[in-house]
Image (cartoon, rainbow over all chains, first blue to last red; front, side, top):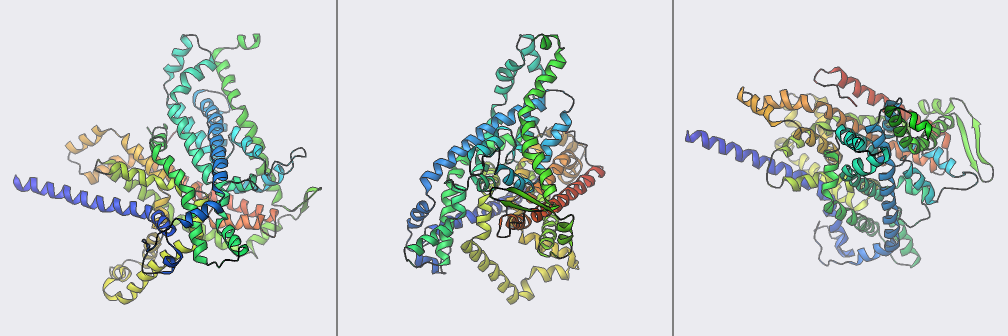
Length: 301
Length: 309
């Protein structure tokens, strides 16, 4: 009897040790580039050339961050980006909820086809349609919508923008999973369609709507596909990050200072860190919504 | 108003539901269908855009496509390497996600922390960050020195240490070995693209009632048997979904080499919109074929419960 208990304990211990090593290893794989980025940024120019240290630095300094902050025009572009992402989130919630609610709760003739459209917008890479969009947005009734925020807002409001298909899919599945009795009770109590929608069904979907808002916010933050098409002349973080290295090079050149590929690369890393810190904060605070949104979307179960 | 009052409830509901769709449908036609048709037309034309005169079409027939399949090498090369990438990555992403989901499904200390970290790449390694990472000099050089160090180690200790020779001595065929080596090299890519699949599969695992496992255990099933006979069949529809997700994710990824090439052709110094459109169409057809093959495979295998969309 004793040996049996002992054997069982030993097995449990082995399993948990193996599991701990595995999970810790994968966590390290994911965090390693991030840690490396942080580490690189604190190095002074002499430390960069010192190959005896990978992570630590002899004279840590914040100078790189300060320069990167200037190079990216951070304050202005941060505010612009936040505004754009918040609008993206809000408009996506409105447009995708309408479509998801309609597809999830109502029965009509062409529903399956419309759902097929939604899936299709997910599968076709946006690059396929980018060229004609670029050309046709350049001349809409004589007005150029390129470099004009209106164009992107139009895409959000109709639910035909970056990853909209995914949001519509999530919301559709969620609305489909709500019980029919909710609607029937509202009907018996004398609520019309709009009343049922706004006061009975949508409050139930709060969690899902927050999830869509957050995903849209975060993915708009990192997007360069649409922003480089429609916001070329605006101060946005994602655009400024993409060129932070060359901006720095130019700056050093005009002020007649020596530069080095290492320094440019360090600038890229510092820019990336400044760029993702807000995202990491949002993710850590709202982690629940990101993960639970996918878990409870009704796709599963 | 009378028209609405006279309708039956069912019909009224249908009309209301359809009305909710109108903004989406308008947008769909304007910002999806029309551009798709236009891009098809573009691919049969030489396109130049001139100030004041708008877009000028010069029809060339199938020339762009013929050029892509005959003289152009760079595009085909990238396309093939992209598809080969998928052939290694997608099965691995699915297997890895399922494995991690099973591990995370048990309670242990630090589980929530691990969940947070595993989902982190979905947030931070997207869009511009992906291209920053793949083009960065310092990150690359540090990683390169590490891998070069490994190679050095390999040549010195080949007799004792080299995994490759060990496997070769075990009579494992060269092909499988190449595949395994490719997986080891891509481990980071696989890990960062598994955030959403892990979450989906974890939710699927949690939806299986524990009583199923209990009764199986009473009947004498081991955990290994329970995995193959209960877990896998029950989560198989979601495994399929994860495969589809992984394919779409990697095909539409902006740091993807084919897409990079298309974008430089279209917006680079040559500005060949028509030619780039032809590329996107070939690319899209390849995606469609890939997706339908996967769909066909899953539909054929008996384990799958047909999942009603």
